[in-house]
Image (cartoon, rainbow, N blue to C red; front, side):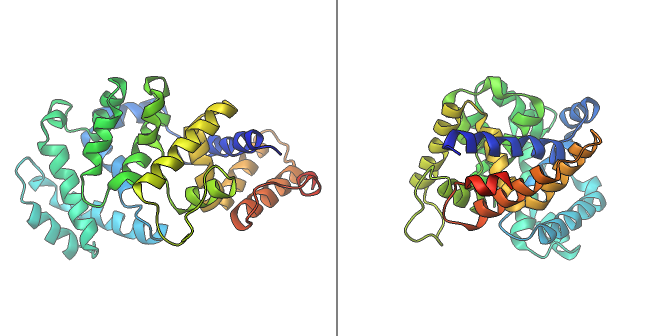
Length: 289
């Protein structure tokens, strides 16, 4: 299997990500754009994903959302940020970084001039900037929120682009602002030989290496004629959510009353090899199952 074929295969996993994690009808999408608090909840679905187990992130996120409902009447422009942080901690959000992130996000949503003009809606803020060709501006502003950084800003913006079909508004240079790179994306991209891993594979990428990786993903995806956003989500699915990926394949196959078991076994073998080996290629014998 050549590199372009592998990229297309992994981009196919990205389509399963859309079905599994971004399934949203038109009514829900409109509600997110018009209800500032619903948009805030959407954003928090990304902002708590900070290099720890999903269960721990969910624990803090659910505790924060419960606390915000209780704190609600005090959530208005000029609210006391420190008071909110203490309240969050008291109500079970025991990670100080999460408390500060939530408070700063709310300060941004409620007090930023552009957000006020957009009804305090953080998703509408992202969409408006993307449609105006200013995704860099949205990324820069989100990046400044405590504990968000490049990865989570890209994660959120990528899914806004995918959910609302905004890819046509992106120029070539814009894709760097919606290419989240986590451990799995980095490792699997290296195994696909899109970029060399640092000699010290345990350390994180510096900015130069991160920019190189994003550019390599975009360049190879353009060559293979696939969406770099779907390829990015596909890499994450293969690395972090292999069982979710297979479940979604089973579900989709089952909807046609036909499950190709041999094809699923081949996919499992390919994903496992991609996740664990130092080589990306799948041999002919393995690929045929």
